[in-house]
Amino acid sequence: MADISELYARGLSRRQQMFGTEEVEKRMAAAGSFGAPLQTIINAYVYGDVWERSGLSDQIRSLVMLGITAASGKPAEFRVHAQGALKNGCSREQVQDVLLLVAMYCGIPAAIEPTRIAAEIFGSGPAGSADAAVA
Image (tube, rainbow, N blue to C red; front, top):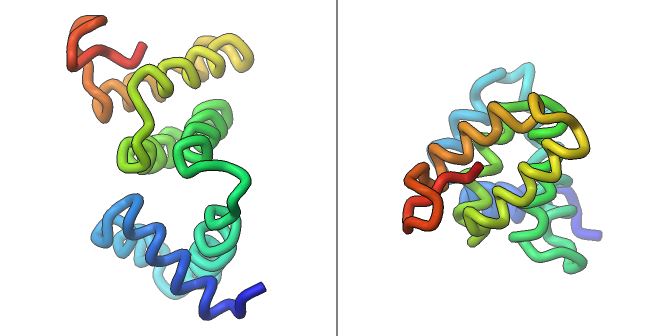
């Protein structure tokens, strides 16, 4: 395995590609020096190691993250990962299907707010249009 500084650099780069440099810098600075150790773990191990593995595509990882953040009631994190999913090429239909699974297995209330967020990010026009709603 690579050393932590290499993992950190790789992870920071991936994070910036997925979410944008400004958004990553804002999130990294949010908790100041108190949050720095957590940000190191996120950059090095989450994005520099786990997201670099070859078993899943970035699209599938993004869809999994949408399911996890929706099911666990983390709308702020869902929003971040929905933006990353869009950047990773996930379709509106894929996100709809993930949220339908969340609704069926975790209860409809678990999918309500994530559906609103996804509609903002992936479009909210009439079903079948180029700007079709997520759910």
